[in-house]
Figure 1: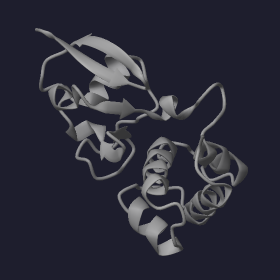
Figure 2 (figure 1 turned 90 degrees about the horizontal axis):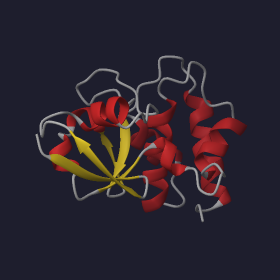
Figure 3 (figure 1 turned 180 degrees about the horizontal axis):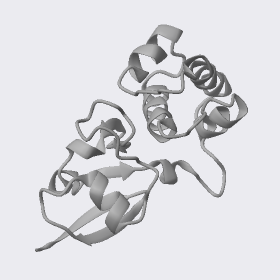
Figure 4 (figure 1 turned 45 degrees about the vertical axis):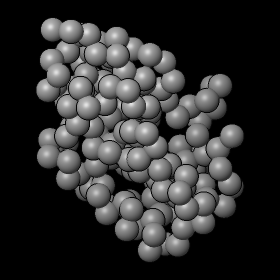
Length: 156
């Protein structure tokens, strides 16, 4: 099986994986980046969201061969120079999680939203995060966290 070269969190990574193995599986099991979670396996819950060329995408639905040549950013890659991304910091400040299973996907989707819409309405945020399931019911705090991050401005 030929090596697949991926750009993950700003670094080239060479991985020996079958072309049809999911990006999620490669990230978790071969690169030990476990922030993206396996949820439904059907791209419906948002637990496995990563940024793929800046777009929030469910990594459980992407064959690793399709991710080659694209810029992949995981929740781990949002930290810059030891500092949390503003959305990560806002989630902590607002206590926008309980069990934490959905948190990575929620944060990644929110980062993608704020890159395209620096001042989203509550409806914009809710619409964007509709792809992400949170069974704990912390939606009001998640909304507050994204609004707080938007008020603080873009990440540097």
